[in-house]
Length: 484
Image (cartoon, rainbow, N blue to C red; front, top):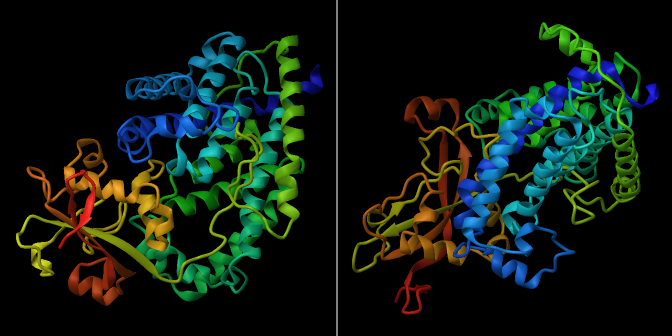
């Protein structure tokens, strides 16, 4: 069985699994802190309503068997405890079978959440976390060297993430082919970070270099992942550097960090050990027969399911961030096949002034954690934390269709000062008494120039576009009604 394992990747496996555990921990904490307002029994898109119309085979989840807010909280906090235990090394301190069960537990718990998460969990990094988590089940623990077959499957996943993202850009918006997309992207991305303003103000030639380098890293470098060392390590580290550049330039939840985790599994473990000043691990035994059997079975399953994402890479109508099965194994990935040239933001305002007038002085603005609002507030760094409501409000500003199932309910909860909803909002201008009316306006935002920033201290300049919703109030049926 010497061919079955790769001792040189012991430290690589450790780096991948511990980073993955940290991301699981983040994801479960996000779920625990935000689910009541979004998915709870009285949430914007309640899980009970979803499972009543979607069968188990289409969305396998523990919540298909039973749902209550208390049960969801228990699942989320169990995931927090389990991922924290794996992060500090519990999975390496127990027998191999117990470590496998721990990783299965993490995957199954988060799968249960994602499969009932609806629009709030429709992002590519959810499936990516699940697919990486599925592969981690079969990488073993400190009792054995990592299986070669699974290491290759992790490389195949990393290849699809990078190469798929590169293809979707080249096939999509022409600005990627013209090397001009980064003239707009740093300003119009869903949730800018504290350095996004500075990235946007880089000289135009540097934006061209950024874009060209992105094409090289996503369309050429991934093929080097399948070459012998040290070339594969150089390719992986190139991807790591690129992902850290993206971390600095914006907030993309854990997308960049999980890509870093995948890349670490490709780096020669001896290099990781040397850089970290770690001695070689103790002698390990060979893998048990039962472990070899499940690894081979899992490899066969992933290879069969890989037909669909592999085909997706070569067809003209490439799908972006698509799952081809309800287990979220062997999916398709990609990002920013098109780039917005202008940024629009929904600004939500309330008033208690009677009678209701159009006078702006009578209206007070709600502030969000990640979504731009106050022009003087520097964007914050949140990733890998994920503010789901803020992201979806960015999409609704692009098209009201993204909010068809929940936006009216969100306005209703603002009019009620719903405590769970208010926990997702940074600045509630009506902490003691809910507003009598809410209105929604659309503004065009742009980053200020160097001169404007020095003169006004404002990071953004905004221009009123139109009213999205006139003033509404709660009607007798406790739903928003247009004010008369």
